[in-house]
Image (cartoon, rainbow, N blue to C red; front, top):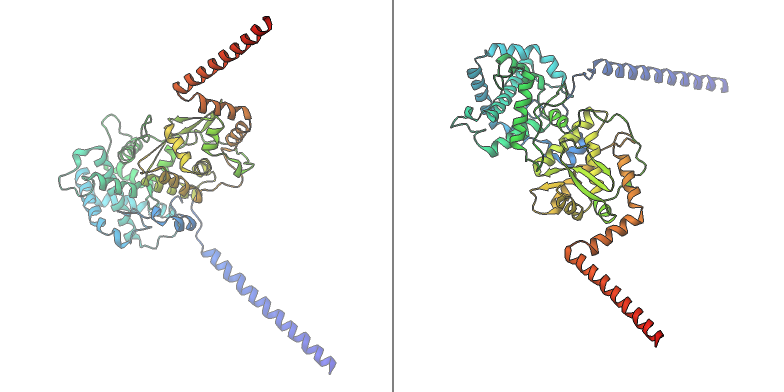
Length: 445
């Protein structure tokens, strides 16, 4: 009996092992099939939905308000009214440029695979519908760009661009959110239609840069002492309009060296720097990385804060996280978040013309900056402002800087305060001399 039981047990074990091996093979084949069917992420990929954690924190910043461009929000019911207007613009584009509809469709059809590869997710739309959507949206963009640069193209019954407020809403949806189409599609259509910005220059890329720059300048508040967006970004490749904006905010040569941030909690606030004697100066540069600290002076690029800029920066932060290895604008947002903790910090920056805003109070401007940082990240331990923050900490640790700042702020802040201090010193000196004279007189007598 015992031998038979042992044999049965061994048989059960073998059967169990056989079943496990069979199940593992099934799982291996199942996963292998999924990997085989998985389409590789193309090198052309440049258009993404914002990461879920960012959308959950600020859903409205990533949703178009007026018009949908591209496939990601194409079927939104609240945006369908604009589809008829986009068709009207396609009709006007074909009539004015005298380009054939057949040629436009052929051009986009030939680029369909490349266009689809630009999206991080699979666009589940058949070929004809996809080509039609890209054509309608691309020509709509061209018409809006042209009407911005050439107001004479606006007809009396133009229901979109004829109204400046509507134009701003359209432009923000069209250019600053991530529901876009690739830049090269619009360039190709411009080239085929032979649309140029001026007779002096027939370069399509220059035309596209100029038109886009004009539109951005028309809807973007001008910062005092600095012109609007540049008309020609310092890059040979522009992915889409949000990429265009990002390039205009960064230097031609991006920082290559990486820095290790030792302590994130040690970055002093604007108020702490002010109390330590640091002076603030507005840097009239469109390069947001141009933050400098030399000889007790902290220079920060001036910024205009408004609701549309908040949406823009959130989309830029999301785009960097999805597309780039180096998150430069994320680093800038992180730095500003640490510098600005209260409305007092904002007040100091406004007084020094570093910040301009149309918000009703400083607390709303503070909220603007604090709302950017929850989505901002750093890649590993890399932080391009680490050395600058370390220099600020070293300066704040020197007691003399704080004493000198306090003395100047409390006793030499106004001419009357200076006069009062001088009068007090003179009075003290006279009192001392009088006392000394009295003592000497008593000794003589």
